[in-house]
Length: 244
Image 1: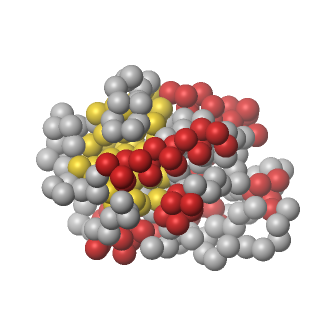
Image 2 (image 1 turned 90 degrees about the vertical axis):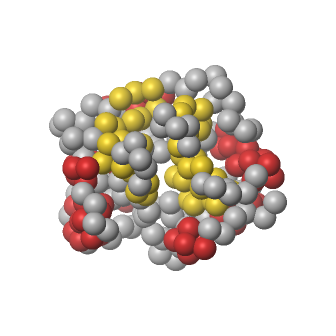
């Protein structure tokens, strides 16, 4: 019901250049979001709680081309969750292996998913992701994880809360871990403060996930990169780690 809007937020997606193949984490939003009716007006959140603007050249396909890569060369696409600002660029990846947590997919599909704020009606017709369940293997303070690469340097961890099957991706670098956080929090400061966002369906689990991220940062050097923090790109460039 709050009539005050936040400042504009970015929508980040990630490209990991890896010897085993290019990896994309999330696909951003579609420029179709500018079209009337793309965001369903019958849903109160899309009618009153969000405004988006994306130019065609800002979609992930053209952005990859600008970086000297190509969507056709991407081996894996990992979706942290299935909200439209993370799945809007799926159409660029018909030839990639797309990984989605099974719990997240089951929660987002169909009309029931649409009532929860997922826009499954805009998924490509060919969209049939590889669904996975988590191994009961701890990764630091995270009780559930799934290695992605054979080298073991890219790992998916369960960070449920913002959505029922939300995940994050941890990329090991020489001296620190890069934590691609999706929407575990909208900014780094909110994560440090333990502030749960207003759309989470499960406050307890979201709070637990934030606590595990803070514990992870106490155990080792972590560069924390949520998808909508205006400072995210600068922290990545500087490899600025969380205070321990």
